[in-house]
Image (cartoon, rainbow, N blue to C red; front, side):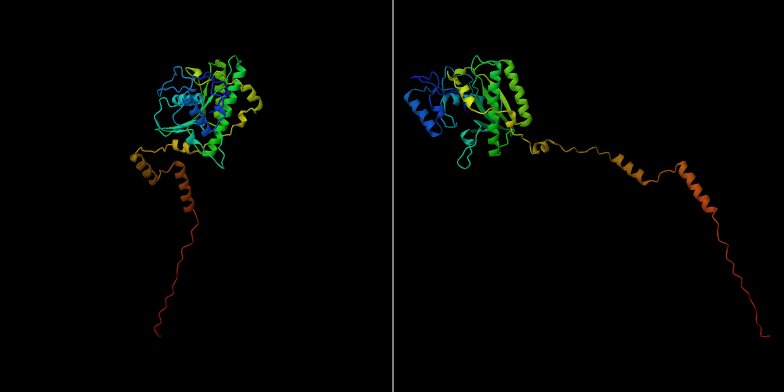
Length: 318
C-alpha cells in the first residue's frame, strides 16, 4: 500500500508526525531501519489485541513479521485494520500476506500486488488493496471527488496488471479506502457511481470507504502535504484505462442446472402409442372419395369373354 506525504519530521520518544525517510526505503533496508528506530526508542511499539477496531493512543504499530512491502508503522496499522474489516463475519480458511503474493519476471515485479488475500470455506477468494486516500482538510467537493476517483482508478489499473500476470481469479477484489475525515454525501455518491461504471468493465472490483476510529493512528500529521505537487507531475487516469474483463463462462455453466422430467405418466404415454397404432375413423369426405373411386372402377369397360369353338369329327373308315 502506498500513501502520499509520508516524509515528515520526528521527535524523540514518540512519533509526532511520521517516520521520516522510511517510506522511501524498500525491502530489507526498510525493515532494518524500523528495527533500529525501535531499538533506539524513537518508535513506541504498542500491543493491540487482534480484532480491536480502535487504537488507544497508538501512533504506530510494527508487526513482528515482515509480511508487507511497506514497513511504515502507519501503513502496517492501516493494512491490519482493513483486513480485519474485510474478514469480519467470514469463515476464513486461509490467508496470504503481501510478501507471499509477490511475483517477479525477469527481475522485475509487476505493480498492484494486493496487501492481503484470503479464502473462505465456501471457496471464494478475496483480494484486498489498501490505500490511505490523500485528502486535505478544507478541500471542496470537486477536489475530493477528483482525488478519490484518481486513487481508485490507479489501484484498479495496477491490480488488473497483477491479475493478468498471476492468472489469479478472485471472487472479489476490494479497493479499501481509508479516509482521514468524514466526506460529504455527494462525494460518496460520486464514488458509488464511479464503481458502478467500473464494474461494467470488470465486475471483480468493489470499493469500500472507511473512517478509522482514530485517524491519527494511520494518518501522520502532515499526510498528503505534497500530494498536489506529486499529482501535477503524474498523468491522470480515466475509465478508458481500465481493461474490459470477460469471464470464460465457467461460472455460468456451473450455475446452470439440468432440468429433468420426472413425471412418470406411463398411462398417458401408452394411450398415445395405442392411438397412433389404431387406424383413425374415416370422415365423410374420405367416404365420399372412396365411393367415387369404386364407382369409377365399376363403370370401366371390360373385355369381351373369350369363347373357344371345337369341331369334332368321327372317322369310322368308311
